[in-house]
Length: 242
Image (spheres, rainbow, N blue to C red):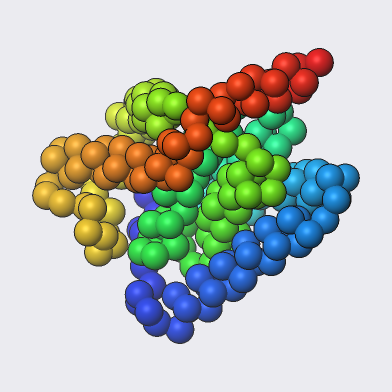
């Protein structure tokens, strides 16, 4: 298993990674909002394509430089699932996929950027890849929401939490089979995160509660117009299916 590493919070690398990521997110969303519908869709396909490409490429890159291991390199972290679904939802516009990346992608990206833990190291491309990955899983749901006007439905925060349990079971099974620590289900993260409380397995319950809290907060801006938006969402789904 590859030893996890961190960087100093508020250090030079932390500021460089986060400020550059934030700049790109704001720039893409700003340019998208100023563009016509055709350009907006082209931008969406570009960032979705990049998300899918890097999801595959990092596997090849890790193998090529000799660090790929079944215990550390399989795409079974929650951010890895979010990255995959972020790419898919751009080309396969389903409401449930959007809601998953909206809740899980944004909340995962926030904590991964504020308290970074590098599961494959920081050498060479790996440092850039970390911020590319987590920047995309924040950018894509924000782009879908702020530019393409997608919105989560009522109780979507709950369905996303339930869907996440299926992914947790998959990761937990891999941990049991390979002696791994995907989704930090076997050992808690080494970062100093306020939501990581207690020892195993209690910190897992804390992370679940924290996830639910984040989902509810992310839903609050849409809670007052939920009924109106549901009718609009249904029309979008019918148009996409046709």
